[in-house]
Length: 92
Image 1 (cartoon, rainbow, N blue to C red):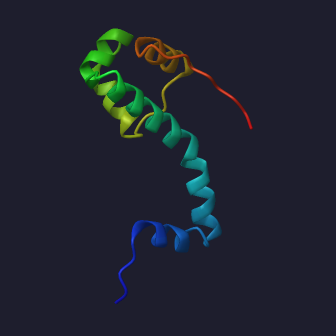
Image 2 (image 1 turned 90 degrees about the horizontal axis):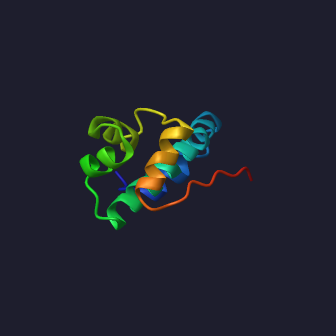
């Protein structure tokens, strides 16, 4: 059996229109999560520290970072402010 790395596997899966549609649908949530984790690490905040600064709980931060919940724009704005960032939303 040929061994595939993730990128090869993903390339194969993206040929399936149903998979591609779901993959593209999850992209915005993935980008939000990625940017949140990146900003939190750069600020050297734990999930608990970020939660306290934003007026929420560590559990909420964990769920956002695990992509099991979709945060409101208001919460994203509070998180950005707590991390010394500005929330920018754009359509392209």
